[in-house]
Image 1: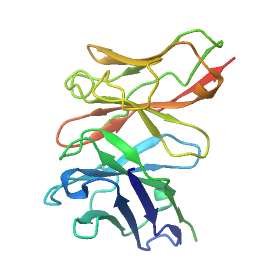
Image 2: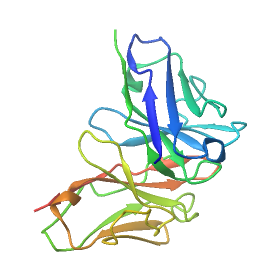
Image 3: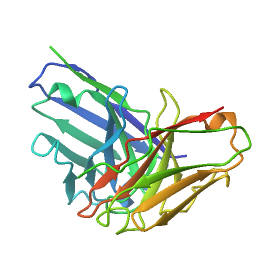
Image 4: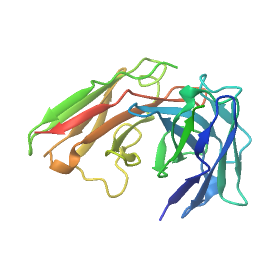
Length: 120
Length: 110
């Protein structure tokens, strides 16, 4: 059974940093691309970032380029999202999602999400 | 990247069929067969219902079907059931390893 467990969310002040983690199990982690998708309170889904299966290629939405960094440790079956220079508009539930492919194409399995709140 | 366009709401009575549209451009929906649909109940994580336009993951009832024509994709739910009431989101590959989502459609079972 595929399981994705996010952690690391919380309350952070504007301009601050946070690191999200996503522990994966139930599939060969190193074979699939991974994505981060967020959902602001009462809003729709927004793709934030994706990462190839090897971790060598990273991709970002324009809204987060230069502030968020996606990475993975295939030896630990873990996906990360380093979030810097956080803004109020980054407040959202952040989901990690396993892709169907080796490069970002379509989300297949989703974690339960972790809430990030950016507020003073 | 611009979001895909979905109607904000849709509804149908139990047993009826309802279709939700998802309109994009030739740079996303029309350009690739990487359209997917997600169901989200309140307070829950999304669940994949359709991928690659019309394929169903294991365990998804065959009451759910997907299609695409030009720059518009569609999700049809047949034989509506109470548990189908949820938010539905479409997504498409948009080139350069970027994904784009629709704004979501709230499906109400009357």
